[in-house]
Length: 310
Image (tube, rainbow, N blue to C red):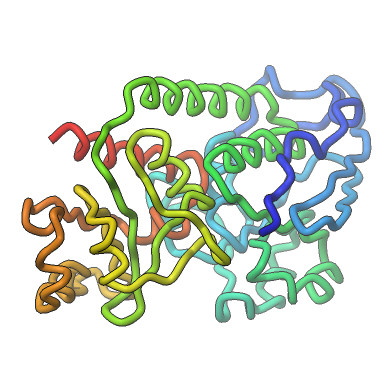
């Protein structure tokens, strides 16, 4: 499986000097450039070359890792797709953003165009087919994080292309330090992050941001195989028999039945060590499944560390 090239290596440092224009209202005085902007050239995770005439000031986000990273550097997107963007931990309910409608991978390009972005950021493997239509209005950068470290490098890249390098570096370094500190004494408990519904279950493998993070702080024996988001049967989970399970129930309703309750009638599930010890934790599916950025992964780590200590 293709492993995405670390984004930090993709942007020539000489192109991203202190002469970049400040990106948006969240930029500090320390980030404000002294002179005119220089063009920026970088390569996204699909190998496409992106050219900007200067720092991106109006960014439309088709994926939450974009909103997440922009929030870290104090910038509000001009458009968003995921409802999680309106959460107070991200852009917030009062943020001045246009909603991008349409199905996942079939977003309404007119919504994007009406936001008048100078850069659009989407998810590789999902929104590749939009490139021609989107690039009639603005460049499209597709990101494909396969580990928490890829998420950190994307944050650094956001800092470079928006002229907020110091803010991005500070947040990235702080997150790396937190993970490395937690990894100093990893738990011996076997953990699992799973999602879906009975008959259609998936696992965050070690080649996903969440799975790779869990592998730093616990025993996480879930390889990717042919798909980083691997399908799994309850019987396969039983062979590993995890001590602690983090379950995500995908539903548009906040009152949806927890995934563990939906699996309760399955005798194989009922026999798992985590189930018998009441160590199945229902988590926020939007944060765990779509967040991907350092804010989201920090929230994931909060939940993981709390439950590993119990």
